[in-house]
Image 1: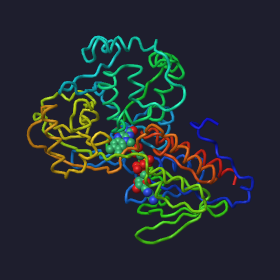
Image 2: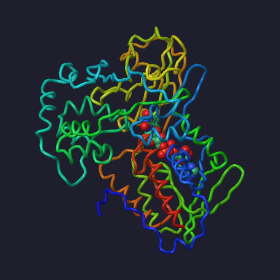
Image 3: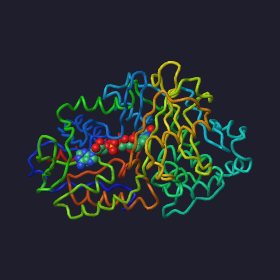
Length: 474
Ligand SMILES: Cc1cc2nc3c(=O)[nH]c(=O)nc-3n(C[C@H](O)[C@H](O)[C@H](O)COP(=O)(O)OP(=O)(O)OC[C@H]3O[C@@H](n4cnc5c(N)ncnc54)[C@H](O)[C@@H]3O)c2cc1C
């Protein structure tokens, strides 16, 4: 068995003896759990979703304050597959989609202390001075370089240096990794963190050759960055309203117990401490919460303690609003990312009011800056005033921001994005082993399916189909 592939759980031969009609319990009401519930209900399977907090969506949260709209967690959803489009249609949000402004195609990366536009097209790449001639020639030579080691796990940094050179790593990939994972390319596994990139080399021997072949084979829309008029939280809120009382907010699951072929779930809520029986249990939890969950009757579940070792470095999101005249930069792009070699104190800044309409009052601009991550998690220990002052200094230098912000909000994520580090397979294997030993228990989401919102929605579909197959046989 290839350990990268998830084994298909086999159904117990005596499953037919189990009484059917019980709902499936979903633990975690973030996007993974809510999407799982939506897909299960589409299959006709009854569900109950337990969410420890008082609102649905987990880190996917938006806040309206007058004419300002803040995203406190994720800012964009990449609608890159027909399945995501179908999901949004099914949730009833198709007509509320806001596609990112065409200006967002332009992305800035800080180079020599100034934001410089990243080349957006192959022609730009060769004509712009962003990268040296040597690196451009190295990129042209990429299709002629041999494959890397077939076995083992290579870091993103080693992979990119080997194929495209150090400057490409430092000024293109390093800031991109900061933007997606708040991570360090030296620590992340190319195979697990960027499986499509890894597959291009494995299947085509070259990133460029593979990308060209894939483009020819999959002609059609490439996908869009989207949000909604009231922010990304529209998705969990719509899913929650469809679930009604089947979503139990403020219900913290304390234990899951296997009793024969049934599953018992213990929970506490402000009103009661109780438990219920379910046909299956789906854990849609971040790795640290999965490690903390008590799972009884499954001796193998002890191996999930390892999930605590998945790094989830702290990130702070600092939202600042200014009068337009107080910002010199044209803000004509998606945002600005900082490579580690530039030694800044921010990971990057989204030009939020350029990206989508309705994020700032007329005559004002909204900027969302991320601090911390694997690079500098300690910066998140600063108090709000110090964090804001630091971000303002950085923005003053990089974007010509002056004056006092009209609005200023800080959101901290002490354990933010799961890092798919070199050796990540052991975490996936721990999940697979527990699932294989415990028919009716399913684990998914950023602990093993990828961290982006589209990965989480995809995980929801996978989990629902796996649980649905089991329920259909009970
Ligand atoms: C700052 C930040 C910015 C990001 N930006 C983007 C972006 O722009 N685009 C993108 O695609 N992705 C982005 N991501 C990643 C993406 O938002 C997350 O990977 C995704 O939202 C995770 O969803 P989830 O449902 O798996 O987990 P969570 O959102 O963490 O939800 C898990 C839920 O489980 C609940 N829970 C935990 N323990 C229990 C328990 N015992 N009982 C009951 N409930 C429990 C929690 O309260 C929580 O609500 C970002 C992430 C962060 C942190």
